[in-house]
Length: 160
Image (cartoon, rainbow, N blue to C red; front, side, top):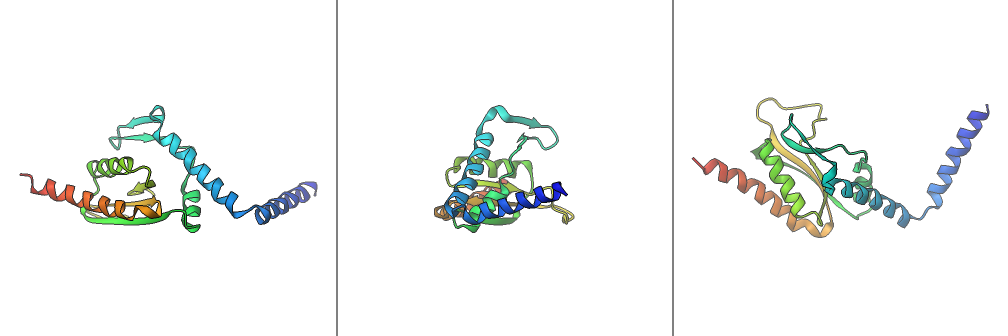
């Protein structure tokens, strides 16, 4: 019985804090999660090579997606999910996309490509796809990313 009362009290306290905590602090707390995540991503001491994917990976204890989505909802960030029908999903395409994101890391806050958690996967050659979170002023940078990804594949196809 005491456990139930304590649980209800803690739930009520959490609810009350959520109501009275200013929206500004909520946005700031989401930015803090994203900044902590990005510090880990750009700290090369946390990187390791994964032979299965032939990529450098990071074991990330922070899941930034809830905070990124909250920042999208508050208008702080924009989100785009892109599918490139002419760009096949390869490690080269992923590396090129990652390089572009890193070159523009002040505008492209985060992103992920071809998530392996997708339940419905197409047969045959899978196209490259990605989701990016970016600052609202970076619309031209996202258009540039699209052009770079498509130009790279066209250049490879033209090479004998």
